Length: 602
Image (tube, rainbow, N blue to C red; front, side, top):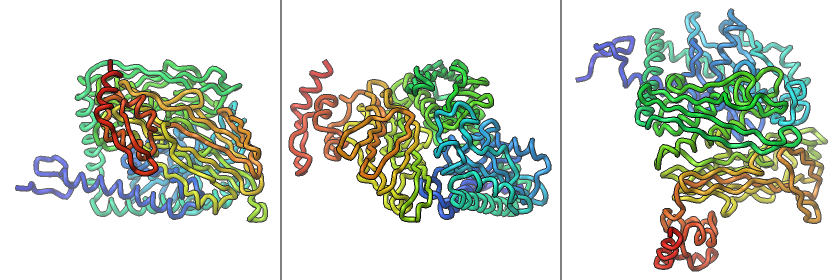
């Protein structure tokens, strides 16, 4: 017989009703999705409205992350630090206020991510904040890019930085701030359209949360928040208690970027698993100091890159909120390249590159616990197909344009049971970014994409293979186009685990009109004239387990789909395939395969 539920949502034994808990938690996620849909429909830039490089979150009045829906982990964790700064810098904030926050030293990711924060009141009581964090096409950098690796400091970077600045009062814009941004940003009307979309999405979230409190009552909402965090923590504790006790270590080195980082950047970490205390600790303190380049991480990106790797490896569908994160401790130090940056070091590239290494190293370290644990590395090569393209558009009377492209693919690392994702992008994107539409990019910008295709044999191999890499060939239609980007993975590749192999290197090649090819370095300013092309290759993911244990039927299918060549099928997987891909006559010779695999194992 069901227990009677009182108005505060409690059963007669004073526990919060689990059915009501699930309903209210799902409503919180729905609020985030309402804001997300508003951004997708209303944003003006391709990077937000098409590639979906933004995230939405609900934060409590105690500055805890409550709901994120499909927000990028690297975006949403840290919004609580940003709302803390709102409370500290604007102690008298009120209903109708909104704040623009992109300060990497006050909890933001990097300057390119503009965060709109709106506090939500009900009956004059502050209950929540909503946060909309969106990657801008331009932020006034000294060069037309939002990922400025060569920036020696924030002054060289040149970005407009807003340390939780009030942009609305009584639901009305601060026109001084609007003029400041429009004067400095290269595409002012595009930026303003994205700003209006973010504020509109935040106001929709505000309205829905007010309705939420009105429907359930203030005390029930307070009790729900407490119980939801406690429930999430218990779930995380249960997952950690299933792990063996021990310490794991891992390291990977970022490619050199002459002359800024001629020897590369080694990133190491130590993971302590304590199932008795149900706690996992990641220590990032034993790394080099901040560097005079734009790759330094922020407190939020360092923390969440490690936490994302841990949450993924716990193997449970854990609620993504501050309750789950109570059981994950990330140790950072000030003035560390993967820690807490010290002003004025630049953090322009803080959402990728080194964060991708942290996610990969964390997930692969778990593979040391035994078969069934951890993941191989995923792609960390931001190829030129994810660069920032800029120039003037002859079709629109020479109007300037700037666009953060997301046409690359990038393969995910394999797990013990699943092949890697075919479109991961990079680990911190968590498979949530959308790939640009070629047709829309060609319509909006004077660019021509010759081809976009998955490349054969690009991934790591194993019992479960990595996702394949993507190759994009593109160029300008008429006038010169500039592409700026920063690329890891030209001298290093995602690793396999537990006998799996690593993937291939990425690369960017300029193809001249006469067909001559020139390789581009990691930090690239590529000027492409009409008739010239740029070929961009990202990376596949690493493999998991021995390739000789992969089922013959899977190898045959990989060959038929052109993910794997017949040569790799034979030489790496030990599978002898006869026939032709073109005429659909492929078949595995099981007798020859059994003999070859026995020889290879011996």
